Length: 222
Image (tube, rainbow, N blue to C red; front, side, top):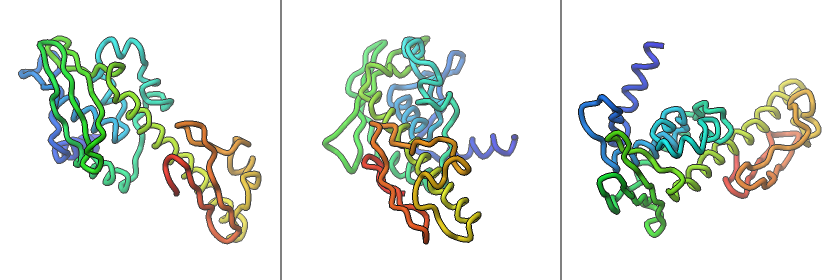
């Protein structure tokens, strides 16, 4: 556990210009840009338990930790090393611009280097001298949900592929040729998983010689 904590601290120190949150009792005041930056980093990594305390009191009253985690029960989403690198690259391409700031409210524009004409807004409010995310007044609401949906979608696709691999190991290297081949011994649900973003079914190309090729209209192939 101690090693895990140390590694986590090192990782955060090496991340993109992230600073610690200044909760009540901390010596200095955080800024809207710092808060927006750190919040987006937690969302991208699936660290819901870290991001949730950064929400305003009103936002937390409207949404529990489990709901904020998009059905994860509030648990942090485990990402692979490849996914983590991709997320870090995406984070490094984000630009934060302070649009306005008053004594107790602020608005931050978030743009991406690859899509400079498109931006999201992050609204913030100051509570006990600390900037918090006003989630439901931010266009970030949609982008954050889509990020969580993408993570769930990829987990669904990995489930199909890993179940097919286990099937092949049990059947002399022959892969399943339909979802029905996996039910109920290798998967519990008779219904093929679908994209959580909009309910779109996956396109699956089955072959008895190789793992299935899986495509989501929203999140690509696996």
